[in-house]
Length: 258
Image 1 (cartoon, one colour):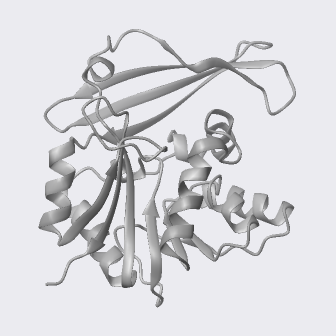
Image 2: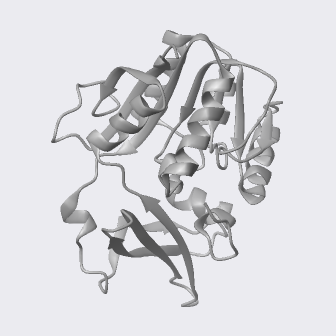
């Protein structure tokens, strides 16, 4: 999991441009329901710019955010301060963290587990989660259900990202965002490049990141191998049952006895 000057996660402002400054809608509501169901305190792993952490904290939820990117955490702290929130944001690695505290719910939202590329990294993360789960605590993972049509797109073609055009946070017109992807089926890693073009001056910035794809039976097997038992597997934020047509894998599990 590399953070470098050209990483998507080294430019928190452009990250928020395409992902949204704060979580809203069914994404936010899904995590709100899980917290209500499974109790607090809550630990969000790979919290990024706090786009999910902060709206939850604003509701009085006892939540801690952890992330490896200093740039993202700096933006998270700034956004929290603007809302007069004293939310704990911790600089740390989801593969190796020691907080001296246990949590009723630990979650990795927004496909962030996909930034761990090999089994040793995934198992290290799962081990840390086990060490920080309270008795009867729950672990929640959000992943894509890999789409072969998307993964096999032409790697030389530019594709618009969502709406394609976003308001420039500098107030200077629009930003056009397109992407290119190249999927390596041997490693199961999708290599992604975002191209930000400012309409007013024609400047372009390129940010990159990679996402490991977890196929449904694969992630279920990894969890079982690491002694987690699955309680629920949803296919969308409305908690519909996971199926082959689902866009998401939303997995709620607990640490099984040795």
